[in-house]
Image 1 (cartoon, rainbow, N blue to C red):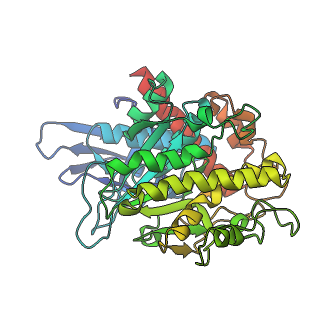
Image 2 (cartoon, rainbow, N blue to C red):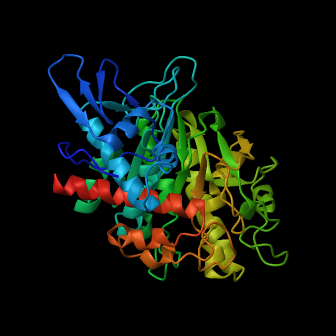
Image 3 (tube, rainbow, N blue to C red):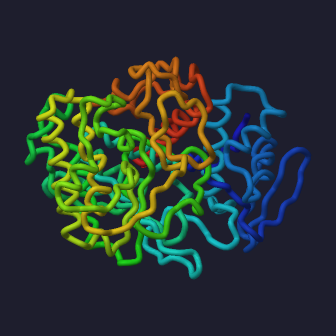
Length: 441
């Protein structure tokens, strides 16, 4: 594919946006090329043959992936190279004002913007919240996650990153990431430093408590009717977001680990924590709905200080009980996973238990995903249990203390085994370019 040389290089768009032609341009075919005249009549743009084909696909219905499928019939080349050229052209178009990077929905415009209010009739706004430490492991994960969300968020929905760094200055790398993706950032306490009760990759400190800290920190920044969606960082959105799946009140995604008869037992009936008995011992007679990891709480619930403090307490109680029971470190590290459901149950606050695949942590053997899934790529080559990354040369443990996005991503992409893995690596490449171009500019 050739590219019109006079256009300016910019970072690639999100791979799930649906570009559409900006209205008002007059188009004049010249042989196999196209001349576009701006609505004001002051600027003309000459598109070569391949750029003309891409322009014709900018109808608000095609994602870059869809465009790639259509262009394969006319052009030869490796998918990864064609997708790179395609996204480069789209952002050149966008720079010149030829297209809009918007979703096709007529009743609700989607945008990564964070400071608008929800449209009437579309329910509460969703506030995505992530609690992280300022280290490379989270930098590259957030970049891939945000890349998958570009152009996906409904008006009024937004993202907040809670950096658990004891309110210190952010690193240059994290600052760049936040600026490039335009996400809101607040700081909080670092419980990995103050609670040395967990092996946490053998370095000490209970990292999982920083997910609870994210809820504590966001409480002052939400309205009672907002829905706070607390998520992990080692995931990405696979396909288009299913807005209709999001709850309108307190809810949690069903989770098989929490659903075990004995928590932190990984299927054992002999060694683990009976969460219901733990609640009973506190005088709580409500039945526990076993969900967690992906957590939805209303702004009113998050603003209830006792709820958040009880999340901290239950995380620590289950951890200490697991240690007393002699459970392995890997099992005990999951103590925080059940604390949200425990806290709501103990305080008599009802919540919906979501049996929705798109929010669930997938089974390691699960090879395919439903459209619009938030896929957790925790299951990789080290687990040896199948799934979309079976046979991959990539696994996230290789990049615990390194920035994955500075690696040779194309070599991983060339030998990817599944559509999910290819999507993950395409998003990685797009994020790498976006961050690289921001440095260059």
